[in-house]
Length: 429
Image (cartoon, rainbow, N blue to C red):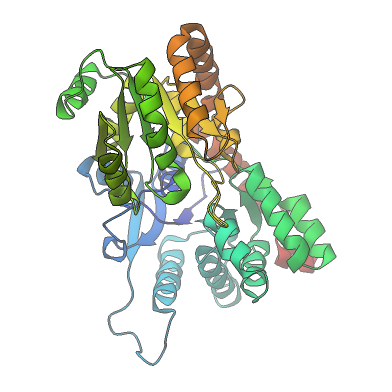
């Protein structure tokens, strides 16, 4: 059934580092494995990204990203009409997508992020259908700040309606978590007429992020030893760690505040903060001003070092919290820690519990005392730690990248058989 499927995915992509960037990477890998050929990725030129945050151009990562798909990178045309204030990049994307459709007979467009990728895909579909009489299936996946920024912050100026319309114009409508779906429906109550709200509730499906849990289960002692030596961590030191973007909503300052309490009980403990982002300098200043000992910042690291850190950690801590309208809609790092065999302390925020599962330890937001209490408790109770590890390893298998992508392809097959659900399909019935 998948023999004649040719998928083009529109998303951010490595070297950009984010959950949906890796979703796209793993979906491309699964498509290659399932269909036996490379599909297509339409993404941003590396020069477009801010290289001071969310950026990792390690040879290993880029090599893998380029090996699992035909990657087409786009930047605004340098000869764009300067009288047109905006839209050069969107037009460049749409034009490149039209060429890919024509040259490679693309018949499925998959987007991660509605804003602006759904609009690009929808415009290309209109051209392909009306001008070239091609039948194309469009699948939109709402993730992250789609819901909690691009829509939540624009409930009254019309932009929220615009983005929900782009979602509804897709043949397949997906949300990255149940939390994301619930928030979309909450905002849609204020923005959509009743019949479209009913349609969205009926047809919007939850499809979790595809994830390579097997990678984080592979043990490489040489890489672990290299990590310990690089950061000069004593062999017997209990490692507590956080890994992810260093942004205010991640709550890393709460973990730093909690660490001295952990040190009182476990004086040899070391706290490793992995990742980079806009809060990195402020967090380093906090450590200096409070004289917090044994804190190591790795900055951006390769997947190899991230895996080594997670596997070496006795406890992983992700103390995420809401910041204005930004809330975690899933949490890929939570999956990575569990796949690495590390128990997790986190917060009951947004879609995090869907990734972390019921077996992880939960603390209130903004509560360093409870963070310290849970970490100390886990370090003391080996039986509880092992139970969490076992449950976590089973939990992450439900996010396997092949399983998730096979489900995606099943939705595509339903559409091809005539059971389309998009807004245009509804009007044709």
